[in-house]
Length: 386
Ligand SMILES: Cc1cc2nc3c(=O)[nH]c(=O)nc-3n(C[C@H](O)[C@H](O)[C@H](O)COP(=O)(O)OP(=O)(O)OC[C@H]3O[C@@H](n4cnc5c(N)ncnc54)[C@H](O)[C@@H]3O)c2cc1C
Image 1: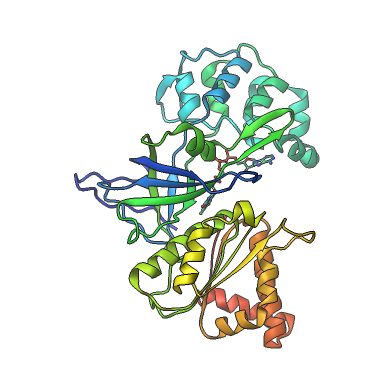
Image 2: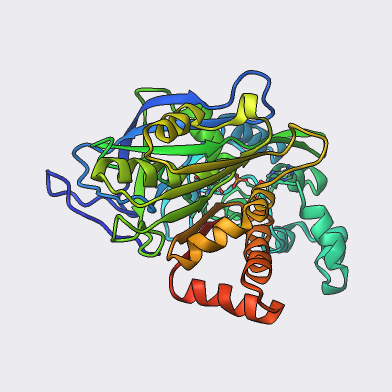
C-alpha cells in the first residue's frame, strides 16, 4: 500500500501532511434495535478535493480524542490545560490542545510505561518491565490506558512537557472504502464498527470510531486522506468471476466492488459470503444485497449469522458447506477476496480454503497448502485484513 496524492481544482494537494476537511453528509446506524453491535454507514464529501479512489482503497481519518478523556487525564495528572508544552519536533501549544489532537492518551505500551518510569521511578513498574515478567506486563497493559497509569502510579509535580514526552503520537485510522465513485460521484462511504467496552472498572472507547460516531456532527468536517492499495482491486476483466468473504465491517470493500460492477455493466459472476451476529439486526446493507440478487447483479450470497442458532456458524462454515462449488469457481479463475478481522476470521477462512482443496481437489494436505499458496502468488487470492 502507498500514500499518493492528486491536485484539487484549486491546485492544492491533499494528503497525509495536508488532509482534506471532508464534510460528513450522512451517518446511518446499520444495526437494528436490539443489536449488540454499533456499525455506522458514513457518507463523506470529496467534491473539489481532487482525491480520486478506486474500490479496494482505504480512507484514513485523523481523529481527535474525546474531551471527557482529555479532562480525566488532566485531572488525574493534576495538569493545567493552559500550560504551554513542547511536542516532538519543537511545536508548542497548550497542553489541553496537545492532549486533544496530537497525542495518544488512551492505550499504553511497554515503551510508554518505560518512559513514564524514567520520572516515576516506581519499583512496581520496574518489576513489570523486567523481561522475566512479560506475562504480568501483558496482563497489566490489557484493557488499561494512560488514565490508569496516572492513577496507579501517581506522580504529582510531573512537568506537562515531560508527561507529553512519554506519550505516543495520535495516529490516523484506516477504513476500507465502501462505495464506488461511479455510483456516488464526489462522495466516499465508510462502514465503521464503533468500539465501546468496559475494562478495569471504567467505560472505554475506541478513539477514531467514536470520533466518527460522537464528535463530528452531520454537516461538520473530519480530516481525511486516501490510502491506495494497488493489489486489492477488482479484476481488469469484468467477465472474471469473484468470490468475496467479508463478515462484519469486512463487507465494506465488497459494497464498493458490487456497486462498481453494476455501474460498469460487468457481467462476471459474483458470490458474497457475509456474517455477523443476528440476521434480524446485523444484516449490514441487507436491503442492497437483496436488491442486487433480485437484479442479478450479485449471483449468489451465503449468510452466516453466528447467534441465530445454538451452534455458532461463521463464514468459513458456509464456505465448507459449498466447498465443491467454491472449488469449481476457483478452478474457473474466480478471484477470491477476504476482508475483515485478521486475528481469527482470516485464519479460519484460509484454513477452510486448504480443506476445500484437500476434499474437492483430492489433494494431500501439503499439496493443498501449496495450491492455496499459489493462488496468493498468482494474485487470485487477495486479502485486506486488520
Ligand atoms: C486496511 C485497514 C482497513 C480497515 N477497515 C476498517 C473498516 O472498514 N471498518 C472498521 O470499523 N474498521 C476498519 N479498520 C480498523 C480501524 O482502522 C480502527 O483500527 C478501528 O476503527 C478501531 O480504531 P479506534 O480508534 O476506534 O480504536 P482504538 O482507540 O485504536 O482502540 C483499539 C484498541 O482498544 C482495545 N480494545 C478494544 N476492545 C477491547 C476490549 N473489549 N477490551 C479491552 N481492550 C479493548 C484494543 O487494545 C484495541 O487495539 C481497518 C484497519 C485497516 C488497517
